[in-house]
Image (cartoon, rainbow, N blue to C red; front, side):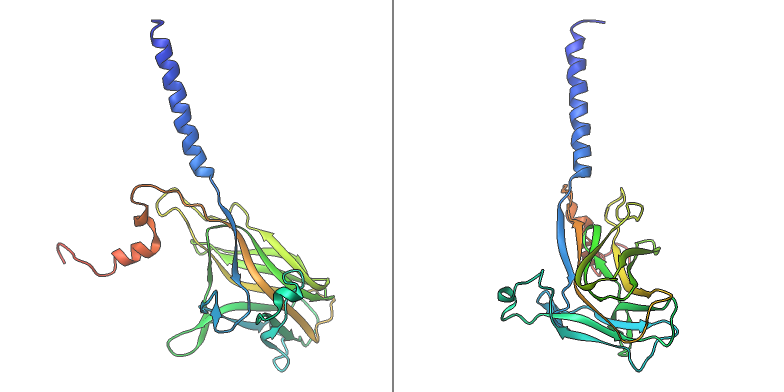
Length: 255
């Protein structure tokens, strides 16, 4: 081989390696943020905007309908706010009161809902921002041997139940569950992001645990999520809102 070609080959190899590294770096770039999904402070607003969903609670077969109730009540975990920080703020938490008629594997479902055109409450799954790494929830327990899980559905309509763990503790505790990598949240086609939706929070009773006069409280449902968006020429055409805007109305050559 001509020795003059060796420097050129070395240059090309280095150049291609740098290009490949840049491409990989772009794929793995992250911007992890904590996003509050619901702070439960108001029944009408959320993040200074009209609330897009409410919460509905229903129980399994042996629920006592005379006891079941849920509402926003005043309160907050001391870990989140000192008394000085909370002073002057209208802080609330979601409270649930209930009872079952007999022991067993009973459950409560806490479901995000909205009203349809006829005024009926219907499920309203919450779209979670970015590529979600974990889901967190502050829970107040009172020593009952119950378990809690969050349920999500991916863009393909597959449901996933994520176990947050036991609420066999007293007072406030932050529970968290990682979102497994096998749940699809992205693809190689544009738009690359595949949304993940939270459909409900479920509280399960243990078979031998007491099931009457049960109270639980929630605060600050949030996610740790990767909000990194790779920029490229024409990236605005990949934005779902822009896509909806472009393809609603407008001119057509043949129609």
